Image 1: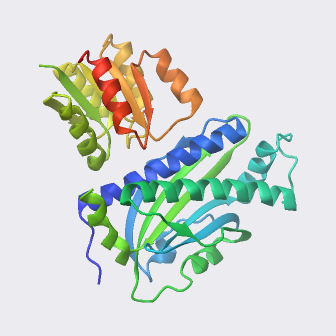
Image 2: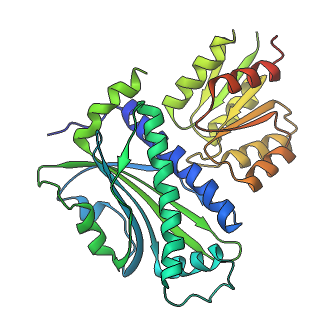
Image 3: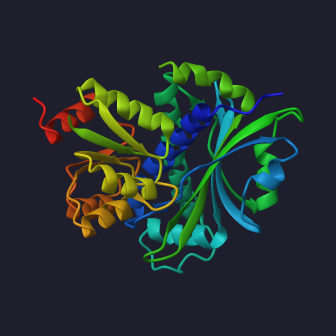
Amino acid sequence: MVEELTEMEKDVLKEIANIASGNASTLLSKEIGEEITLSTPAYKLISFDQFEKSVTVPKGVVICAFAKLKGEVLGSMMLVFDRKSAFALADLLQKKKIGTTEWLSERDQLKLKEVGHLVLRCYLNAISRFINYQLNSEKLRMFSTLGDAVIDLMLLGAKKSDRFIVLENNFVAKAKAHVGGRYVFILRAAERLFLPVLLNK
Amino acid sequence: MKKVLIVDDSAFMRMLLKDKVSNIGLTEILEAANGKQAIEITKKHNPDLILLDIILPDINGETVLSNLRKTGIKTKVIVITAVGQKPVIERCKKLGISGYIVKPFDDTKITNLLKKTINIA
């Protein structure tokens, strides 16, 4: 059983999520020419059984960019949109009239995947910078699925006894079109082992 | 002795910034973990410099800055945030900031800006 993290440990994790999502939003904002508003990251320490109720994924069909971390820290990063936001984002990214995209073409998916890569890079950079060693991820996957299926994917390979650190925050762009999304960053709670390295830096 | 107010919801970030500030010889350091506290402390203690984050849990840093300026408080402000979006930077500049640093920050850059802003050679 992994005990609750100290306030300072939580704080460091939230700051990593804050920097990563802030930097990612800055880059995304440049891409779409829209200002993006961010919420402060929320922290949760949850068990395998609590995962489904605790991790917020929009109901219905979602568009999702997902990558598992690999190497010294195990976890995953996810960028998730409801369908309407993903379509509006595809329009903005390609400077199309808002409302043009009604389904995601291969090109649209490629553009959204680029956004996923950009966000993933920001998370990996933020973590690497704080803990002072290089992190890698498995190949980023982009897919359209039901919200519940995303939860299953995030738990793939996890054990019933695992606990998870979840950091989530929302972002929204709403000048030309409403694009709302969610950054979700998950670490297996056993990975707190890396935190003392960070705090003693 | 010059007073510095550090506004950031992260205690870890406040600790890092405190370190930078005390390294240049400033020892009177105040802290605020949210926007409301930042406004209250500024009004009560009148710091010489505020290091201000943008993403705060209650009111954002931009609103804090705007609120201070509206009440005639002209304290020097350096914004230190993960938000590097141009419209935000422009609006903060219009509100008269002394610098804008995007996290993760470079130690030398922040030290130099602190020294310049607070007039330490």
